[in-house]
Length: 579
Ligand code: PEP
Ligand code: MG
Figure 1: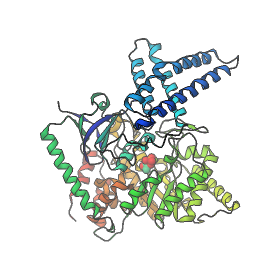
Figure 2: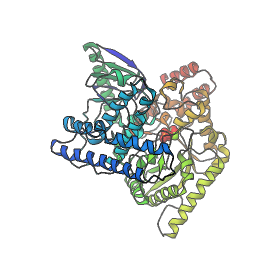
Figure 3: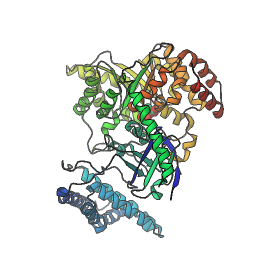
Figure 4: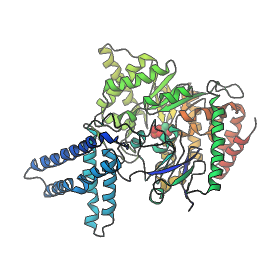
């Protein structure tokens, strides 16, 4: 029977494919199938990890001081029992053998199963034991990560017509899907600018997030249509619906073919303004996409993605090589490297640093870097060293005040000094800028501007912090709106004020890649956009059809409106205009 599920559309595309359900909990693991001749080795890898955890717990219990709290011994003994239970030690081995799952996949599948069973208990004490099971699952997962994945076990589980259906996918988990052939994503949770949605846009595939329940009502292998335009998922479509969407898909493919002819066309507005269209990247492996669309450089390198999914941090050399690769590949085009923006939905779990997923208002981004100067200095030296190979711009995330900016600038100077002492080269004139993504930074901009060279507006966080709406929370997704008059007012003010100070200004939040907002941003005077590479050509098409001068008047009208319906109407009219 055909039925539909509604959520929020990400990327204006259609996908048709087969559903593949992902596990509920602890997705921080790669999912792939094991080649038949590697199965026993994979079972052994899992068994070794379990034994490590069992030994670890035994040691911990033995090392407890006599005066340690009684509860601690009790918890460790419960954990010891769970780690010996065949449900956790044997069943995943069966999954590896029977379904050819890799060890991490088998483990997360079984942990989910157990968590669901515990959830069904009436007794509260028993119900709460699910947390212990999850903790042991996490320990085994970590032990698995310490083991090298066999080369033969190359990821091969996904097909290009596969639509992944998950309760939620963390940014770290999204990384495993990069470079894979996939048709799209559906999640119960998330928002349009959650990092999951951002990575999906980067992959150029449609997604529908915030469906609330897709993971529990869609079944494995069911035929699914994702309508990313309307945020609708159609399950088991009949022939008529299928034919309709196949037609739409063909139209989209034809449009994409015509967009591809714009790769070498300069982004020039109808009234002759040259607009810079830069790309946002998460990893050096994203470079192929950037060069394919001939972007004007990288406007945002989210460096924290180099730090995710690993048990030890990338050291200075590893970071330097990663940054240098991007810089050299794109030189002489500029590369804006943002320092670590860890925290909120991007946690760290390494031997030296533990950053749990925390509230968006918590210890994240530059706050975290300033609290850990060694970590920050290591990154700054790596970025500075890469600057010797091209044009690097250094970007500080989440700046909220003058003192904080001065503190960061002092550390940048310290990193420079350290490199001078080591006689290592760097660009002495490297530009340093800040993200304006907290309203306080926008409001005190005149005090910040003399200290920096450029500003990049992070509209994703600026919207979240101006409206007090968590960008990743599906429950309040309807309240998250980048065209709220307060947000638009701050953006227009930031562009105007920065330009008056003759400093560089760009937008690198998701707004920059939204073709419905290209003319509006041009009307605000923006000349530098940074977005996922997959969006560059669509935005270029809009630039080619826009007059900056004539968009200005409409943009002023938008800024004078305070009701959402009125703003939406004015933006629609601006977009429908023939200049
Ligand atoms: C933003 O907040 O708009 C931004 C570009 O940074 P991120 O999405 O990585 O938080
Ligand atoms: Mg941000």
